[in-house]
Image (cartoon, rainbow, N blue to C red):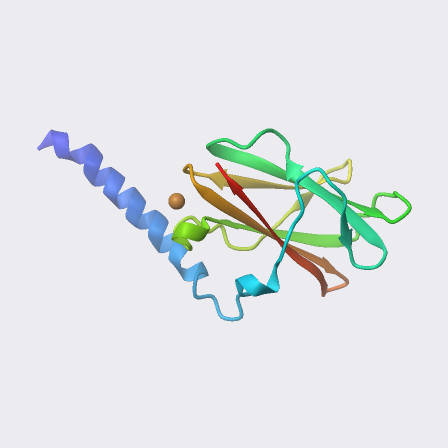
Length: 148
Ligand SMILES: [Cu+2]
């Protein structure tokens, strides 16, 4: 029956997506929510260890689709610092694991911005967990919660 083909394909696509997403839920050594501080609002300066601060936010107001999160890191006296590794993990707290991206490295642009595309696939509550590493050591873990 021709009419059933698109829905079958959709079901297969959903199954493939779930199979891809679920292993990240039970990843051994995955940080628990209490390891993350709640980040202040996007656009503000947030302390990063003793000698740095960072500013984060989406490059455009977030909507359904792929949003780009940007993180900029500065020394306390305002000089850009690109010596950190920044990771981001997006998920929906109300349906944890279903759309989880897993921990992904931000890419460093020529300008020195840390950039990460984040697939915001449905409206609702979202969380982006940021992890900052310097010389292999964790400096900060913070979570940004927002509604889409
Ligand atoms: Cu969802």
